[in-house]
Image (cartoon, rainbow, N blue to C red; front, side, top):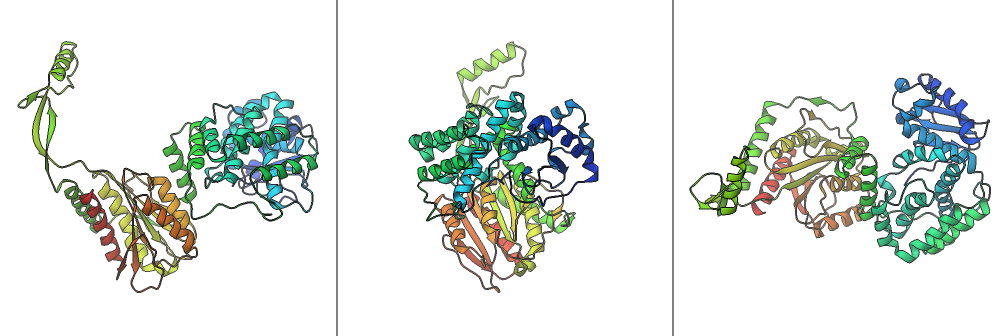
Length: 530
């Protein structure tokens, strides 16, 4: 879920950075124009904002903006008025926090259930921006730039009423606040309506539209609206005082897809490119992991596996027909006329007038293979062989209509080999720590290769002893993949105790090389049987 952008208590975030002092000073001088207040200071520094892109600390009378959204200190001169056009997102973040500083003048009363407080803060996001736009209409331009920064696909991890309502308050409410347009979030509205229903969404809209009319210091009204929001969603804060949490055993659904589509469109990217960029930024390998040149043995192994995959695609030839630009064969009149017209027009003919019978291999679907590697300390002997396997699989798949990815999971999920890429170096993964990120790794693999999408050849291979901290939600994810038609191959070291999951093909392997061979054999077999 999104970080709150207004926090009580003293600011504990990053202190001022000398390289960014000019930005801090310039925006501190500028903030009275945005807020009407002369008691605020602004800090621009790497890591500022306490984990959020930007944050307002009311008690400290301080606004922090993460310098990552500016870029470099010399990208613009913050003392000049035109600098905001060069850093629209960062300046939009400043305007957003200025809206809180100017209009979020209420505090949640003590004793308010956490779920009610969370809803009240959620409603405050669009309320503050609405007030800021009403007072300074030109700020709408900059607030629009912040939406893609303040939102995250993780704001909709599952398709349930709580998260659908959360997304509605973040986006649909901003339409009524006149920050974005209804056209911008057409797909999000459809997904939210599917989950909540029209009647319930209409009642929630009445709540946030009422919130837009509440005075800046009326905490009682905001909390009352938050209670009403909970009742509409069927939540009793007395019995359920904490905000509902997403079930880790469920995959993201249409809410996340609609939000991703919106964010991708807003940033000028395709949904696939946006998702890949987000995953690479969050799950990239640490910089201290070693990257080395592939050995001759690894290059040879890649060529052998590529040859096996090629044979698997062509091992059984069948009679078929193939178009041809020249005889012999059966003349196709329409295409013959098209070819003559192309020649008469002086263009290179692309039509194929003849059709001949031939023996061809049957068409095979593209194999989508995700390999998850346990990088906990107990799997240390498998680190080096699986590092090689990732490079070998990527290069063998290049010319064989296959897409592979490799993800390590330990204390965090790490993207080792991205899909549709042929790495020039072998990334040597490091095995240490626990294995708590398995669930995250499975969801990343599903995002990258769409393992639940029917009509494609999919396989998930896991190299792990299965000693995971959350076996129940992990099992639900595996079962979901199995029911969606994605084969799950689990390779367990024979010398390690662990857990065996159902709905998998589990193989005990005696050594790491055997695990690599088993993955290659499974890939070849899957293509042959497709």
